[in-house]
Image 1 (cartoon, rainbow, N blue to C red):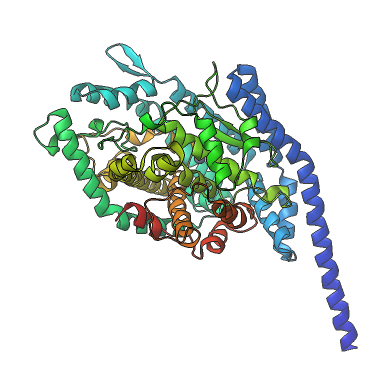
Image 2 (cartoon, helix red, strand yellow; image 1 turned 90 degrees about the vertical axis):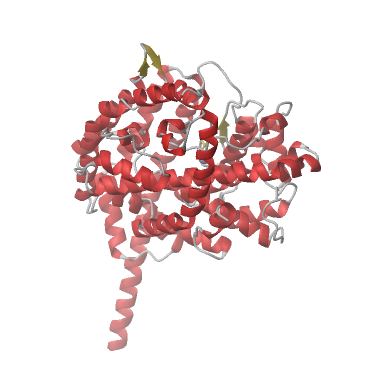
Length: 555
Ligand SMILES: [Zn+2]
């Protein structure tokens, strides 16, 4: 009797499991049938818009994006997923991962539609305000590019100040709107059971806010002294450059950039000269095929040169998540574009070599910052003396002559960006915690602490609101820094374990097919079948750590 009963229970349970599995499989099939064609159409439309710059193409792209938003706002679908998730009956690891990814994609369906629409409307309105703003100096209107150009080139500190203050006026125009938006985002997050929007955003991106804080704290400790050192060098350089009496006279507008997010060029390096007569497209193609990651198919579909109306930046897109990968670029024969080409095609090869047998929703990089890491790692080679020798053909003598300045240049760029990312991450975290605090003051406290810049005396303006990311690309900035950390971690792993060398300076990976094989097998192929930190651990033997970034750029 007992035996029969337990068999009955067992088969009952198995039946339930099979039923849930079937329900999830059916759900995915139905989801894919709508999502996949829409996904392709939307990517294609935004690609076409970026190439043509035409209003009607942008309109089409926007329409398709709205349809995607609508698809994931399906409350019934979320209910079904929740039911399957709560049952705990999905034991297959791939299906479980799909369930997890889908659930996080649909979770916004829980939010109040009116609030979501209000959020989109506010974002669009703020975006337009940024778009329409021009700094005004002596009756002349200046675009962001004009402002950057003047800050970079002018040696007149009064002119720099005037331009810097004029472009900060956008803050007053948008600050109140942004605070309203932040409060609305927090409301939505609370409706969904999160403490605030920052916590929600990170959690839904599979990042535990406590882990990210820990990483940023570690990184702060690791970079503090090294940054103070380079900041001292920068200040000494500028005192001479502007003909000032002392460092105390240096103000935030003297650092050649609106936010001191990029390093000023204080070392003598003219890498552009090595690319002047080079074909960057061919160099990129040869490099990637040399390391066993051929991508001629991506090149063939790409749009790499300037055209009227075309988007002036660069990006990589996987139109159908199954091989139709394209890069948009505007190649000029210089070092910046060499870096950009290596960067974008780094994204490209990652996408290309994801296991094609993975289900569509897992056919993605493990995280946006993991593909950023690959792109950053390859992009850095554009200023590597060894890479310049192996790929751009500079002589050994020249390589040794420029080596020191090349390393210093990369180091200062990483350190300056790293401290700026601290400001952004900590400001956002604190702002979502309490949007009613004195944000103007918070901003300058952080800028002083992490970037070692001097607050202009008595300044009480919403300077934080002048950084468009805070309003429109919320809680994303920390990913750039995580990408840099992982780029160093992977680089060190490959030098030690594939090249089997302890020389971390003079490496280019050029012509080494084992590099491509490793990246394919350990990083690209898995797509997003594992949680990102598990993928990193499987690939390098360690979870994400700032250790190698510190080795590469701090010591
Ligand atoms: Zn990128």
